[in-house]
Length: 305
Length: 315
Image 1 (tube, rainbow over the protein chains, first blue to last red):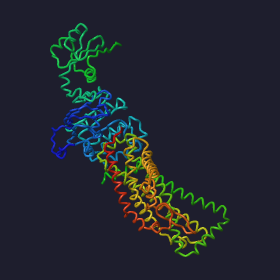
Image 2: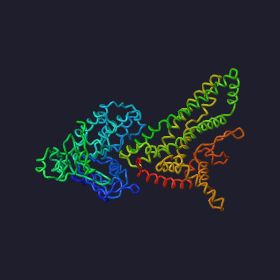
Image 3: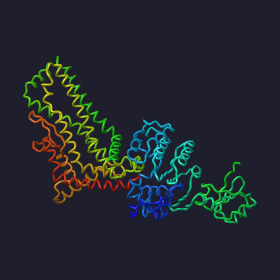
Image 4: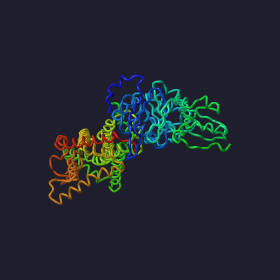
């Protein structure tokens, strides 16, 4: 599709890692991805958040050349549909948990990846594995689900890729390993030239490492901004009941109640005005997600206190 | 090239049971049967009298007679290996592009920087080279062990096995002919192999059904149309496949006619000269118009398999 591909070598550090225009994918009459325009720059960690069936996985598969989409899509200057094998030298992905072949032994998997992937460091992989309880002679099918995820993450982290795509990478892992994984990802793996895209339902665990946030709903991009923008644009205000009516009058995106206090979420409001009414803070990604995906709905939490 | 070798190594690892264990079991069965026949003989044969007499009679035969028979017996033992090999290769190809879609590991394989073309090539070469080579190696080892056992037996009745049969053996020739026939057979059956790869690339489930149903339905239709009006097609698809197997450069027939052992290429045992097992006859099959058409058909099937593989994901 793309004619720019031969000039990929000329791309600069400022060229977007992913550039999608009018990306569309339909399954029958259902539009899984609905004319998405997207640009992701190098050196970002992007959280791709959306409810089940929103089109996240389809979008990721399109980026990895695993789904045939209409529209224009360029990843690292290549067309993922026709140049997948070339693209995979610079892109790593975990498309889902537990997709490692079940018959293979751990050491065979490492040997094979080393022979096929030019940017794989066997030593790095062995170092990561040493921190786990995975036996190198074991077959994948004898490992627990969590161990398979650990193994896959060790493999992927040992590949010097420009783009890392993780679809629910930590499903089935315990809290200790999840924490350690995200710390490693940020400290050892991530740098200015690499980009990471993560989807997960455990938003709280990744929000502190994200640089950008993309919400997807019904195949469309519902929000696409950097975390700094999130801090500037969205304000969570906690007020006492006597101020609730005044705050409500300013047109919040969402209102909820917790421990007898009213919590409002505002977009682009005047900070000085809000500050007079109560306590301000940046909303969590989870709260922002709920506000954007199902606005105008009032919920109440914290009744147990 | 290194990636291709790595992919072929992966195929061997995945199918170790079929490619390595299976021929070893067959070789084991050969040896066990040989030992059983020896023990049976020893049990009923008083002091191996009959066996001794048989060996003496054999020793009295001319050298040429002995060497011809040894040659045929050695080639003949490849039959069991060949038949099982074909079954192994059939099911290997049928699952080649299907199994990883079923267990979703295709998502891992597609995350590696290898093209779909290279993947298909690695599967095809594994079926054409790796599997036959594994069977050939075990076949050779089986013959070595069987020869040692036979030599010990013959020595035990006081005859010299070297003079009796080892000197008239030509093992290298036997192994070369079998290996050559395996290679030629791999090429000859390319259209079928390509068909199986195509089926494994697109089958949503039960690839066996998708592999057999189309030729079956076509054959029934052809026979039916033939029946309705004298349709000009000479043969149905099944008829064509049967003919193809009958003409294959595979050592598939062993029979005894008037006390003379016979080995022939392909299936039906006829006395036609072009069926006897010679390198020339094997080569004849490969340099035929049939083979050319077969290669074209194989190329079309493989292109189809590549088309499907490029679009294949886990769902």
